Amino acid sequence: MNLSRWIVILILLGLSSSVATADSVDPVAKLQGGCCSTKLISANDPNFQGTVLGGSPSRSFDFINSTGSVAVGVNLVLALLPGTPTLTFICDPFSEYFTNCNPQSPTTLSPGETLLIRFFDPNNGEGGVGGIPNDPNPSCDGVFACSPSPGHLAADFATVFANRPGFTDLSDLPNTEGFSFKGNLVLPEPPAILLLLTGGVLLFFFKRSLGIAGLRLGS
Image (cartoon, rainbow, N blue to C red; front, side, top):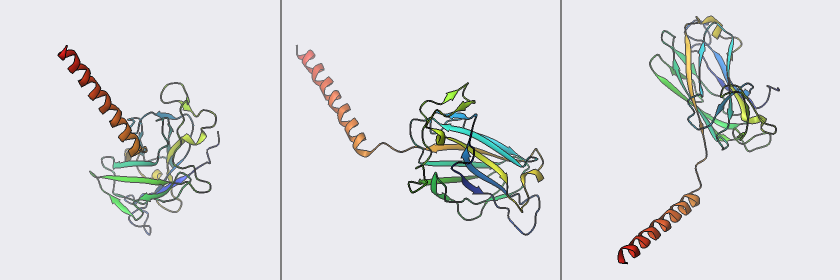
């Protein structure tokens, strides 16, 4: 399977790029095509999570959007594992999926805190795929071993954390230290007109049921 498609990079910067110390680990995180993925069936699917430990140059977590809608954003909530030094994060705003992200300036994450990384503004321009597409029928052997169905390759994506060249990397952290992430997909809200129509239909049937009840009482 081609793993080189549709990459968005989230760069994790250390507090000081001039000194490579244990408290300034600088891995790179990105979304890219995946395989053997976990199927996500809702915006807040509990399986959209992972833990990144030190002692390895990279770690990837593969997922397939099977929520029924194109994801118009991705949120990642990061937290340090106990005993892990302070890390500083920054995101790259452009990819084939999205064109914006936050935070775009180095933001420190300290023990006991959480940090929200947001990717948003679907890329509908040339080369963009307008968010993360939906795959309505991936081929799965259980929830955690899925592959995209034909024509839905871009729905299969991976969250990847890897070393950033020239900086202290994940391999320099003990394998008992690192960070966890919990993700969710941002799905488009129903159009306002649809909500109004739905409300109108419900109101019609409610009034009708009251009328029928009144007639029965009158008889």
